[in-house]
Amino acid sequence: MFKPLKIIFGVITLSLASYGLITKNFEFQPVMTFFMGLFILIIGIEEFKKGRRGFGILSIAVCLFAIFVSFQGFLLN
Image 1 (tube, rainbow, N blue to C red):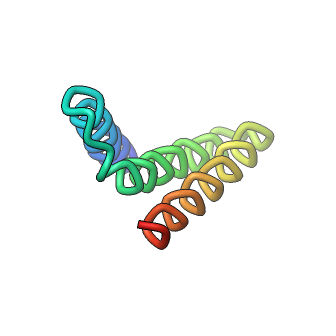
Image 2 (tube, rainbow, N blue to C red; image 1 turned 90 degrees about the vertical axis):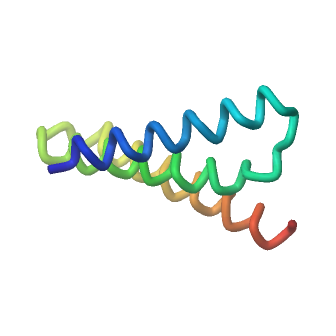
């Protein structure tokens, strides 16, 4: 169930990061960070389902930080 979401969020993140690196236009960086946070959230949920609680908590904490940073980017731009 989570595999298609992980692939979609990963492709969006990679596409936006590649666009920024190639064109030197970092206008979409907050959007990229938001999708990266969602990607990491899916990884954290999968880790909880596998029973690896420590890595799941770490992934969700990183996800929350990435989403917080992306919202800061939206508000400051």
